[in-house]
Length: 557
Ligand code: ADP
Ligand code: MG
Image (cartoon, rainbow, N blue to C red; front, side, top):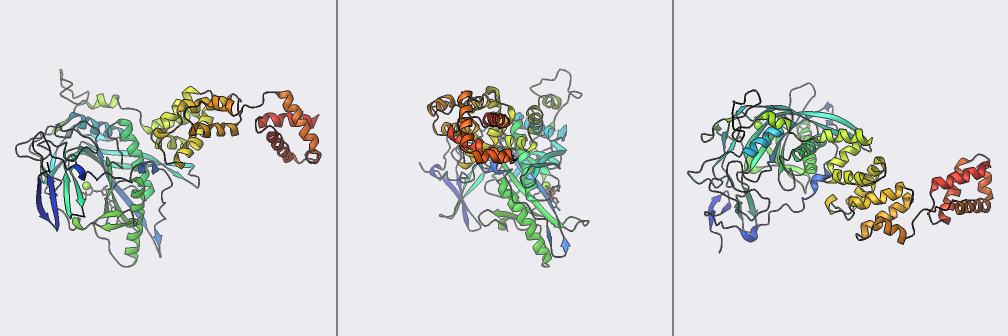
């Protein structure tokens, strides 16, 4: 049966509404074409070299740029903020909509405890002060994917305020130098998400999917403490890792679970901040950095050419790489904020204020949550550096790729090889192969145990490091074989027969008297030539350090 549609005109577009009728809902079936294809996986680019903002200098004036972010993170929760509807990404359109989500008259909000706990956890992890009393407000605006005509948010008194986020920016040509930066968090507020508008330009109509309507969001508002796109992208990446470590949001940007609005302005150093523009709805770290750097340069050019900056909202056109004004957001909006009459103040407790005999299912104890906060990424990195003597930038890479840290730890658990060797193989060779083939760690054809076994063979000098690379390539191609099987099939074992190796070294020396002469005259580098010849003669099955030792002994005798 075709879904009954409700249509009304809106600025030349027809809005089409999929009807929600009681338990059996009519979805929009085949129109489910809104997944952000082509965007997947971009979050992993976060710490790749982003375009670095040029120092905003042009003409005679020096310019300084200021960036402040407003970030919406979708709370990981089975149900919505004020209703019992389920939350799933990419479910059939309008299949997860309760009467409340569709704003049917007479429905009332019921606050989801899980969402409140997630807000408290996130606030604590970001060093915020948690307000023991916070309030809900209605923010009014008209849009077809907001059936109530207002969003319930926390404008007057949010749940968490005055925090900070520390992040590390990698600098230098090889990005080896990590400097620590901090951005202040102004506030974190709980609010509802809106539905989704799916624009069907072919039929010149817009379809509304209310699955997302009422899903719980954390809005994290940062102070204008950043100065360029890369800083902003790195701060967002750190926030993403923190939310994931806490389990308060999956924070997958490609799936819209983390959406960023960037406020950007420029001014002359020493003067007040300039008028800001807001670039809305950036859904990848790379686009965020690009949009900000573009916007900084655009504003400088505009001002240098005698123009002025309008306090406007803009969007980023990722194909053209530029920001453009958003036509539908022209003019200052009046949100007509008012207290939400259907929700009482949200009251939280701590150990000191907890009423005697309180039912722990009825109250939220901030201290209880504080004591159970999981390990944060900054602590994990410190441990890696301390435990394995890892370079700071390596600890960043390990955490930045989803699943890589776990892979590394599993290899460490199963191998006899030194942690430094494991780090180098995981970050250089393993990650290199993955990147080359655009694979996620979870899609790797090599398991941690397979790599662990290979590295144990290398550590025990059963194979040379060049043979190890050959085995790695074979493992990558054929999942069914173990490293040991490949080594024996391809006869890659290092020569263990010292006597035979000594004889071979002797023969090579005798065959190349000129090189030996050079060496004896003091050209010590000439030994490499002999080592190379011996390795070649053994088909690279001899340990170069052993060959060197034998040659040196023979030369000095
Ligand atoms: P409003 O009340 O208009 O929403 P806020 O003070 O809440 O303004 O700030 C919104 C966002 O804009 C914050 O993330 C803040 O850091 C940022 N911001 C404020 N002033 C500037 C500025 N001059 N340049 C860049 N960003 C700014
Ligand atoms: Mg604001």
